[in-house]
Length: 156
Image (cartoon, rainbow, N blue to C red; front, side, top):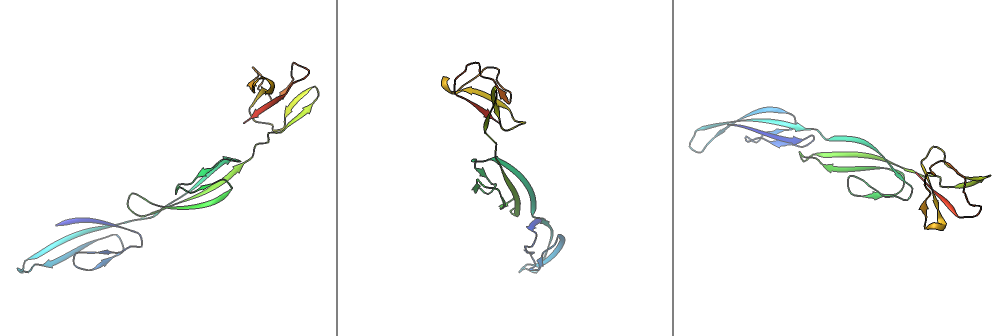
């Protein structure tokens, strides 16, 4: 009779004849039944190695990140999550979490306004009109058409 078995690295396996295996191997076990007949069992033992991977993740300041093990964080850190893989062995995921802060400041640069962050995407809004987007105003600088008003910019 042939059979297959597998263990996780570092575990042990007891073959039908009582011997112990810790490495990938083929073991022949000869057993004698109470009637005096021999039974031969050939066992192929495989060893599954633990898996590990490194992951980088980035969130915006104020957001919450959920790690693979279900824990959460809102600050920059390195988190080690140990899970069980499909073979029942340890799977380690090391996540390096960074937190990005977007500069949402606005400066008065005569004759208009300018978002302090360069290189982002912008949408200027009219705060006096329900924070509605101002059509076509998607540049870092904005020149209001009215002398007075309240304006803001959405920066991504």
